[in-house]
Image (cartoon, rainbow, N blue to C red; front, top):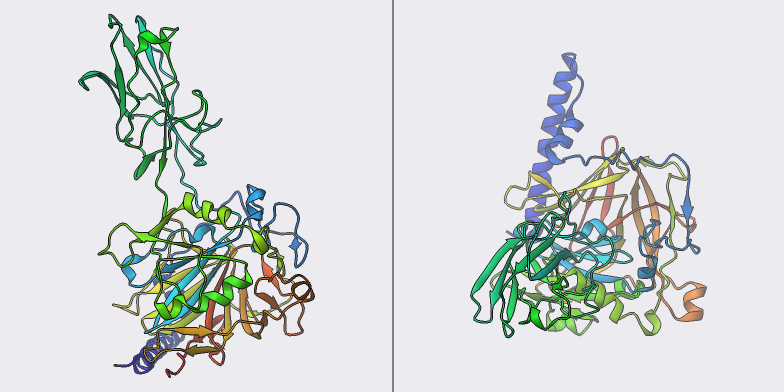
Length: 528
């Protein structure tokens, strides 16, 4: 069965189900029951995120942009950045797969300022997720308790601390927590165990030695921390004895002789570890990425590409798989992600100018009701966005190919949080197929203007997108991001926060259904 026929059947099925539900709603309404059609759909398809009581919805209008942003405010979200120096780095875009469903949930999207969903053929889509100004970071909960006292009697005292390297700089910084319950063993020069202990609640450990010979040598070995999964030991000897780590990648110190030290206390055997925080599911590059990354001065990371695609895109790094038998096994450690941004922020993309869009905390103009949006690329590939007023964002759910009537709310695999976006945009642009299989798709976003539908704060707006060169771009030769305007060409006030963009074909339909529910349908381009 071809895609168009499958899609037609799917639309008929959805229409039948919705029609049947409407009949039931009218039936119950006639018997004095309130219509529950919409709430039924929401309950069946979504899990509402929980709003943070310490971060309530804004009540005062605050706007940033489109050309000027205060220091430390991201021009891609209007949100403050903890480390403003990161705004000088290029954005990095990752090609993240959501097919097959076994690679879900996606990773790292909770800190992505903008995500584009791109059609790749056979009814499938892929995500081009940007990372700028903020990178996913592992979260370690430090143990409670005070440092344990050292042994009461000893000739030589050996020890120090195991710490969690929160910022990944391989050095022990102020405030970085100790790691409790790490097994620690002291071995002699024949690697026979002499003593063993575990780190205390603050990450400290001690060994008290007596009656050791002048030529006695020892080694300390650290075991697996029970509180940190997928850990690794940071690089050794990266600084002074009081701030660096002293163990190899296997968690072992060099051999040492306490008797050769001036003091009988050798409390500088530190061991730093970090969680292997990794963005998974990276896949091959796509032609549609090229125009987008150029507009953002972006740095693209993929897991390779078809030769016909590779000739049309530029990349700055490649992700590799740990398991060649796992189709979604390619990934990227978050520390490498930040390093890629730093190592490629030079030339015309040094301190990129990513201004051009307006962000406002409250809607500036009144739109149509837009609490809910379905975006159908294929009957087996449908997005469902539902607005949560307390959160001020749209939660994202996707249906299952095996049971397309069932939707699953997408979460971030790294954090477990529901993925929600303050802005959801349907961007209409011309698609063309470059091969007979329909798997190499070009999207024309180069110096163009087209229609967009923008959803924010439960309202829907017909608007425009543009990449036509501004006077700044013509003068400097530096690109600006995809910009969104109202129908008169004025900057459109996006909501402060993250943005999700669905790329659809130029003449695809975006229609308002009952109430605030909208439907957008993708039609694949013809193959040559």
